[in-house]
Each structure stands twice: as C-alpha cells, then as structure tokens.
Image (cartoon, helix red, strand yellow):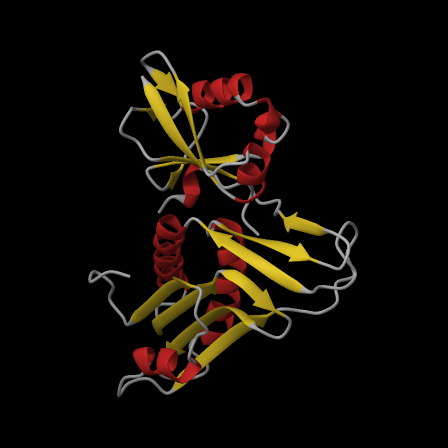
Length: 238
C-alpha cells in the first residue's frame, strides 16, 4: 500500500517538500512508516528518533496500525464544536486578533471575570543556539489538528476547574514582527476566585505541549526552528 505523509517545520525543510510517500506491505504500523521514511528519505533519518507522529489527527505510538486512507503527519515536538458546555473560540490564523471581539465571544450575563494571557514577539533572546537578536518569527501549524487539540485543552480545563465557563485559544501563524501578538488564551468565570488565573496558565502551558505549532526565530545572521522537549503519549489523546 502507498502512504502519503505530511511534514511540518524542520522535517519539511529537511525533505524540501511538505508531503512524501512511502510504500509498505499490509498490515503496517507507525514504526513501519518511520523505517520506510528513514530508508527512502535519508535527509530525514537523523530527525526521526525525536519525531512525533499523528494518525488521523491523534498522537500515535510505534505500534499504532496504519491504513492507506489514514492521514499521517510527522512533526517535531510541539513548542470548536457545538458539543461544548460553555462558550469557546479556537483559531489558527494569520490575521491579528481582536481582544475585545474574543472577550465578547465569552461574555454572558453570568460572567464577571475574564483572565487573558497574550504572547508577543521578543526582539532579544538570550538562549544558547538562538540568534541574540530577533528580526521576526515564522510560525507554522498543523491547523486541523491544532484546533482539535485546543478543544481538548478546553475540556481538560473544565475537568480541573468546573467553575470556568468559557475558553478561547488563538494561535497566529506566518511571519510576525517584533511586538506582534502571537498567542492568546482567555478563561472566563463568574468571579476571579473560581480558577480562571490557574486555568489560563494551564492553557498556555498545555498549548506548548500538545498543539502542533512551531516557530522559526530569524536573526540577522541565522534562523533556527524552535523545538520542544515534551513527548505526548496516548494519554494526551482525550
């Protein structure tokens, strides 16, 4: 059977293309896919030990079975529906976000507090291996899976903080200049002492663990993809 595989961030750069194909015997597993990729695309081989795999937009283990019709994606570690019980807003967008409009999506008569975390592009980074000065960032996302994982984060928040009544998560993609907003997580509740501060902190931390979004730091002399260290497991598929 022939399998098409989507590539993101550093893997796409290494391969020089966003999609690759491999041929496998049936039955086959994720491990078989990785073995075939290493054999057929040597430029990717060194990156595969730390590569994450999704099958049909769910994190997959080496023993996960694959079928010809499956949507398979390889990517480095990560740096809304009508069934939700409370207001939500999830977006992966190249456009600037409107804070008032997002808050408006969460506001209801029983909402008295909205806590918001908003990230922006720094002009200076003091971390080994990164350009000391940032000219701009380039964000890339596996958009369909990213929005599904944002919805998962909202459900996890409600499990931990039942009094939180609304969740918004927004990730911008594309080229962003110093000072541009990059990420937003907002949580709403009736009162400020009902978990919204902790929920917003949890939301941004969890986004950086399981939402497939990557950034490239571009400086005057070099550019570097930023990869995380968290390794999602089957338990991260809600």
